[in-house]
Image 1: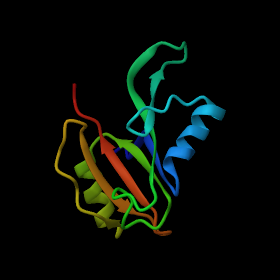
Image 2: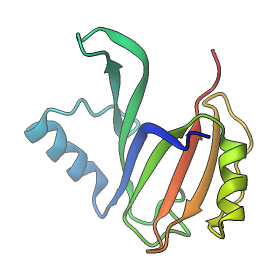
Image 3: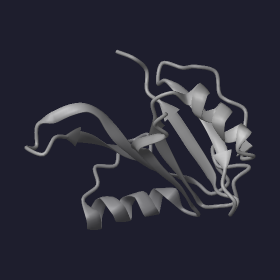
Image 4: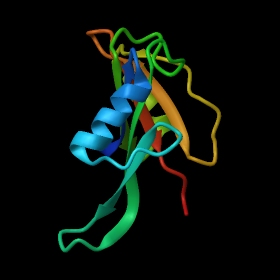
Amino acid sequence: MKRVTGIGGIFFKAKDPVALRAWYQRHLGIDVQEWGGAMFPWTDEHGNATKGMTVWSIGADGGEQFPPGASPFMINYRVENLDELLGTLREEGCNVLEKAPDSGYGQFGWVIDPEGNKVELWQPPEE
């Protein structure tokens, strides 16, 4: 079974998310959208567009998506079979959180790593 196949997103907290987003936009050229983040489309080795993207987002400190994790960031990892992976992680003694209901964006589940970081696992929807 494949476990992680790539990174789907990077999310982190900020005391002043508006100012921090503006800093990243001004100094690093990230195209921050009104929803608070940016999407980086994937390309192949020749620069041609491929299916998928990586999301980058800054949220308010204390945002709802981070607890019970103790870290100011969360990485979203793409997986091929979320249910199988969550089952395997449980069998291996990992702290697996409840899976979210399926959505138009795919399936999401979470595990807490040994340092207390919340790790998001994402199975993209089939097209």
